[in-house]
Amino acid sequence: MARPSAGVHYPRSLGEFSSWFGSDADCLDYLEWLRWPDGFVCANCGHAGGWRLGDRRWMCSACGARSSATAGTIFDRTRTPLTVWFMACWLFATQKDGISALSLQRALEIGSYQTAWAMLHRLRSVLVRPGRELLNGVVEVDETYIGGEEPGLSGGRAKGKKALVGIAVERIEPRGYGRCRMSWLPDASSASLRSLLIDTVQQGTTVITDGWQPYRPATADLYNHERLVSPGVKASDLMPGVHRIASLAQRWLLGTHQGAVDESHLTSYLDEFVFRFNRRRSRSRGMVFYRVLELAAAHDPVRYRDLLLNPRSSTTPRTAPATRGQPQSLDRPPAGRPWRNADARSSA
Image 1 (cartoon, rainbow, N blue to C red):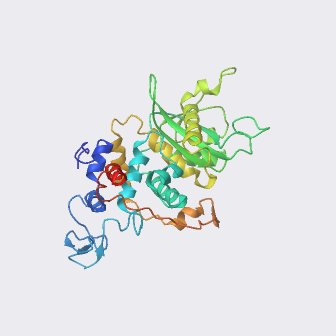
Image 2 (image 1 turned 135 degrees about the horizontal axis):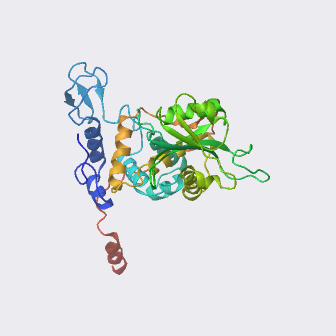
Image 3 (image 1 turned 90 degrees about the horizontal axis):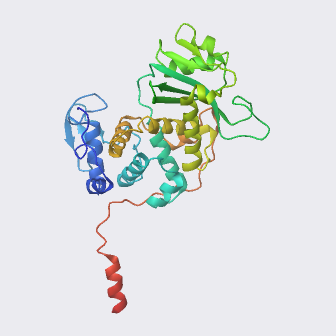
């Protein structure tokens, strides 16, 4: 399919969203179209073609395997109605600064905070598209600590702050910035920095850094390295791009999430920030919603137990919640203007 069209492949506004996805059946049909635009394809044998069953699943005409549009995606085995999932995706994608788990819980009347938290983390897990293009052109690279200042510690690389994060952003001449990448770093050694560069920046690119010595071996033989060092000039003036990204990320974490981001899940939040920053010029927020669902429909299932594990320690799970409240479906019949009925009952 060519570039998706507004009003045809994705809704342009909240009103259009409400008219498109008024029932769970509508949401399921949209997922089927996203996953199988040319018709059902069996995930078991790869055969194209099958029969619709009474429970809205599909049966392959070749091997007889049964499947549904949600099987093998992040919606696999979910007990949350698809109307709630779609509204969560809409709020997640269309609000400029995203939405916190507490705000999502209140907006959709979700029974527990943990359910809302898990829904958002499942959405964050799909935001890194497999095989995405590496940064190129002229790229600024630096590191910073995310998590706030600590008393008695000064300097960008002072130990004790919460998490070291590598930042890379494309510099567009004469003025402006392109795409960015952010990644957690175990340390600021040349090995860690070289791994960051290989994962995010295309080889042969001009890489601009400060005077930190490990960048010399980190860029050797792979990149055109330019060191910007000028006594008496602030680093933020020499490399404004990476410093602006770091500042925006800090403010976003403090604003939307009140700074309450667990270090073990910092990578997920950084992926969300990068996803939003790289789509900041999108004219249609509905297009962002479409991209999130497109990625979600192509992503493997993400189980709740996987979200509880600290990605930097495979032996220490987070505390499991006591309850898992499931929200009601947003697929509901017309209310019949209850404010008028209340007046009629009171006058009777």
